[in-house]
Amino acid sequence: MFNKKWVQIMGIAMSLPSTIFITVWGSMQLEKMHILTKTQAVLTFLSIIGGMLFLMVYYAYRRKN
Image 1 (cartoon, rainbow, N blue to C red):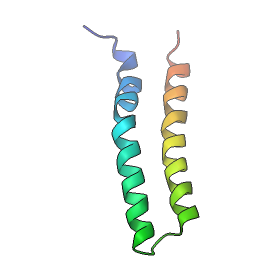
Image 2 (spheres, helix red, strand yellow):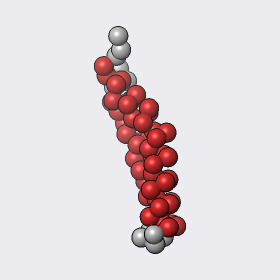
Image 3 (cartoon, rainbow, N blue to C red):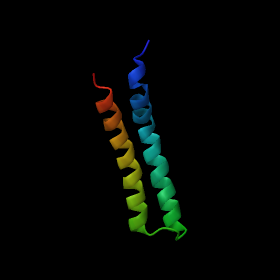
Image 4 (tube, rainbow, N blue to C red):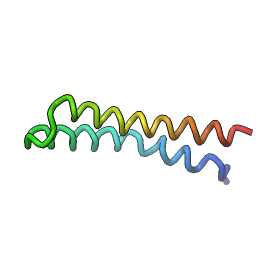
């Protein structure tokens, strides 16, 4: 039915839009409550999304054969 070695990559790719939405919303809420500064909120967002993109590329590279 589907190639099992690509399930992990597809799972990350499919969860990326909702992760972006929740991370932005959560970061902005923490910034509104003065827990994070605006710079920290942006860096938190970028680090989470960057980590997910890195994992997608890493898993794809490991399973490319």
